[in-house]
Length: 425
Ligand code: HSE
Image (cartoon, rainbow, N blue to C red; front, side, top):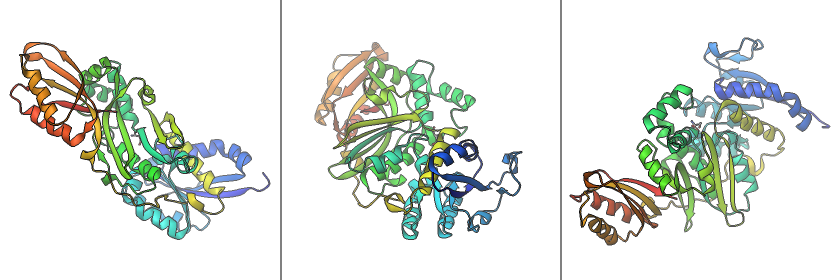
């Protein structure tokens, strides 16, 4: 390289991701310098917890005072990896106002308060980069914003939560039911001690809000995403789905339907031959469909310190190599599209329900479905007598019609439990 450019970094947070960014920059420093001419230097690290400060840290690098970073005019880029939506927002806002470009891995922040930060970045002509906020090491933001610029994306399906994919994979392999696999995952460190954001679908919803915004160039915030988790999915559901040729996955689905946006997260049955069905364990994958591309899928590690750090470092080097902020500076939401009502969406469904095993019961259920225009594609009866369990798959139908039919089925005297329903992709 003919010219070297020193890039001074202020790192906010020294947890799993922050410490990995720090170490990865140390490790890759010379390669990045040789390859790009960018001389990366982490000059300040904000960390309140003194126990996290490494023994070998140079004096004066670690600080508990954000103003030492914000007010240091020699710092070019501030990297936020502290998480949360309060301090992280304040720090990024102030950093941009004080002349710094910023990188964040914080999906909850962008999905809830992204508009104000992106607007500020645009007004001040700062870079606000966020590759690490979705799917860890998978370069999905770069691919969607740059490589897909002419692709006219209309559908993004994602397996964007590793914890739930790990749990569902083990259930599919017959290794236990949801509570025991979750407990085991927590013991091994694959699931958080407080797992609600992951198993309840909120983590995936924030990521899908970001992907939906990029795909359709129209702002999607977390509150626009209807989401469900996997807490009610049993090993039996997964086994019945498997018997019928399906895999159960927590799916993020962002779609453009008749010019309107729909972004949702739910556990769903996928045909075993669908490319996403093969994504096992804690891996993530994003499956894109567009007018000009047909289908593209990216898969890889969606979490973990070092994989996520690779995405952070790529953003830093990209900022350093981009002279003007250009179209990559912040948000690509130049449209303002309406949302498609969830109950107007069409889906096929899996239903599992316990019924009395006597003549006429099936006819009653079929009649209810018929009244609501729900057509049954396949049906299996498991067991007999009081234990009779019906497992049905419907053809695609309007969701509001389907749920009206289910409401009526659950009120039939012959229906003996709460029907379990899952969408079929
Ligand atoms: N907890 C997330 C997951 C990773 O399980 O995929 C961070 O978003």
